Image (tube, rainbow, N blue to C red; front, side, top):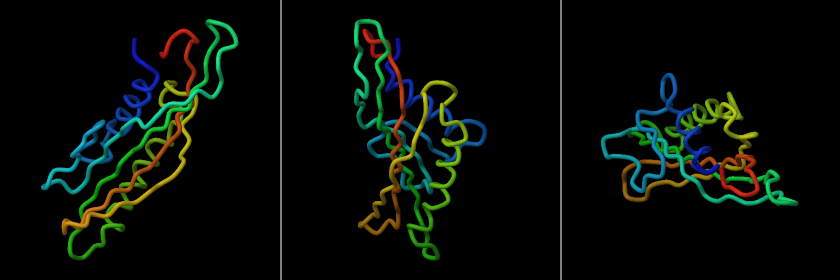
Length: 145
């Protein structure tokens, strides 16, 4: 049995890797996601899951909102600023995930929530744009799958 959180993260990674992957490196939950030689990378990681509707009696579906972060990493060169370098990757990730917001039926719906930016201060000219999505899901009241 796979938990609803694991199923959602797995489906998002699969969507980002399908066909032509959105980046050379698409992974899940990597602590050091971008190698020095890599120009682009994407990492999908769960943040939290919240109950949005509790079961009235045992066995009824329970609604959940799972918060999932998709980190988009890009390195820039001397001719491009880091925010511009990561921009096309954000567009690709967003378009790929929103092409099927049910992730093949794994979730009820995927809803974008925010994008935050972080810029490297150690001279690597890299940027990380983190997209946060809410995945709406249901589980059977007695399981987390």
